[in-house]
Amino acid sequence: MSKESSALLKQVPLFARLGDKHLQAIARSARELKYPAGTPIVKEGEQSNVGFFLILEGQVEVRRGDQVLAKLGSGQFFGEMAVLDGQPRSADVLAVSDTTCLGLTSWDIKALTTTYPDIAMGIISELARRLRQTSMRLSE
Image (cartoon, rainbow, N blue to C red; front, top):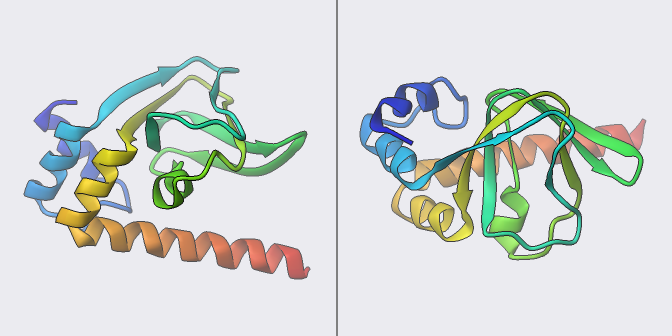
């Protein structure tokens, strides 16, 4: 991904508060990945070199078996759990429309979060939000 892509990253809530230096570091570390509609991106139980995915455009479904756990679109991300705990994937993720993601390897995201703690705080905030949503759904 080019340095010009840092402007696109700035529009993503996770990275919106980061400065140009941070955004350029992310853009240098990442690569663009394209998935046609119907393509599995990750599969439950697998390990993968690309650990973290940021959806630039398109839509994905997070599934476990036949159950849709979440629908994610532009500006949202997945794969952070595998990066943080090193465990196999906890669900399938399927592109439901043509989807372009920004992919970061586990070692890239660990280096970025160590160097730029604001990135880590953004991921932690989103994880907390998702945990609250899941907890509320389970209590209904």
